[in-house]
Image (cartoon, rainbow, N blue to C red; front, side, top):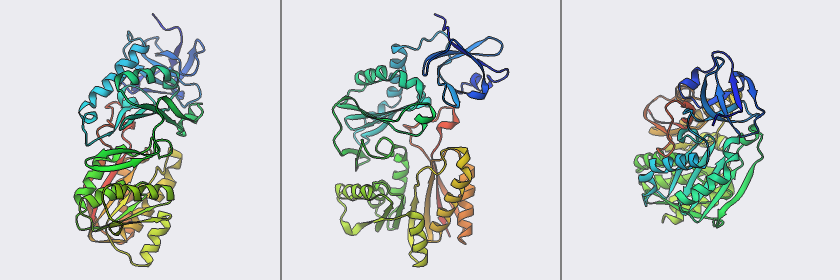
Length: 398
């Protein structure tokens, strides 16, 4: 049945859609017909009158519509969501069945054909984020399908991200189905045990995207004195000690996060003498360490997102350069700088340039020995480069 409500594009604005990019920006829209409600399904029509996609409408967002399907004959109904969710789960079949990987991203939004939907599995619990008007409208259907396709004890929502406000949606959090998760849920990551707080932790509770990068840090840490900055609950530090680091210092501005980090180190059998925690502002502490001539052999910089939008680009660039410069000054000859950016407004070549400038300003030289990115359960859609957000460098300094 033909959809009555539609979004009509300005002339020449269909090129990205013809390459299967799933976003329609407000500037591309000529008119909207039929007065669709927030999240309602609409057809996308070119200026020449050709229907090229079916999407969900978001009147408050700069991204005015996000495509559900480019197949005109495909109906967006309960069966549609079941097929998309089942396909996402199938792609991760080997990961979800791995007893040494009990934390896994099950659905990664546009990359899995479900714009704005995040689903993470932590042991027996699923945690969802509904970040777009379209998936918000279909929330009950999605939860019901997840219950059947991926049996679990409970499904919890963590939809407090700022992007919801840009969609005209209120932040929301709470149990969607089943049992409330316990205060601490334990996951296994390559024989490292991590406790996390689903209700109050960052994002959905943990940074699953760093799975491969923690393993790389483990492999590089033997005999090294490690400074783990923006440590959160200590995951990189635990990986470093597992790899034979001589000592790990975790630094974070959150006391509760460091308390959970201490519990996580104990959970993995590490004694207090092998690590220490410092509650402090990382920028200030790096300067303090420089003044006191502290030296480390490996420094991890995994800061929060410095740039949410392109408007914050300059501030973010200064922050990344500053911490790279301060950290480089603390590294021993042959030391390793492990630095990350999750800011979408800063791409890899620019992040490399910023890091290089910071290292140079510290009077140091070096080489990149590894590039890093998000783990395989966070796949990058070929037509959707925006789904690649995590960039990382391992630099060996002279």
